[in-house]
Image (cartoon, rainbow, N blue to C red; front, side, top):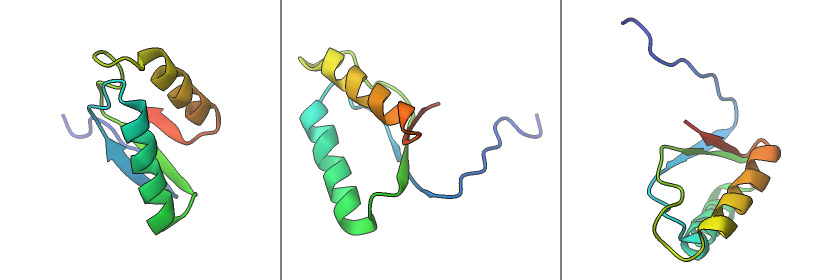
Length: 75
């Protein structure tokens, strides 16, 4: 297999995983990213966005809003 996945991303991106429905922690991470790097970025999720914590639905809705704004990609 020569190439499994080829992606061309022009903006700054951050790879996250294991959010597990921890919406407030995820929002804090995004706040820190924006504070240091600005608001023009893409979050690439490598899995486990929801499944364990109390805010699964809210986390899902939040990431869907980000996706609609082309700021969240689920690989």
